[in-house]
Length: 67
Image (tube, rainbow, N blue to C red; front, side, top):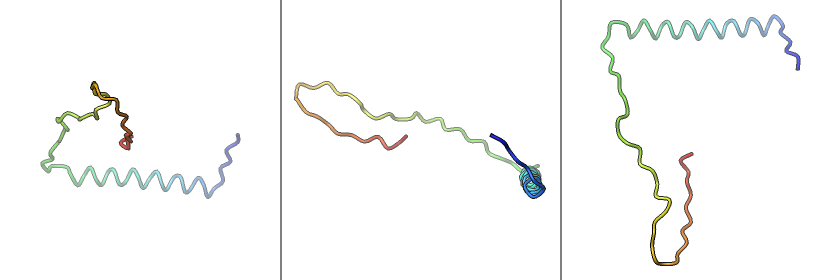
């Protein structure tokens, strides 16, 4: 597979990279000196029940949509 660069693609990539770098710099200077709050999720993640032992013959249909 060949990658072909022309002037327009190179200019577009350079401008995109410069814009991202400038946005990060601006975001860094806006939060400088201000109090920031770091948060961490400390609660346990609850998992679904996959198997329950019982004497009754039943079938359960479940859908796990959390993937």
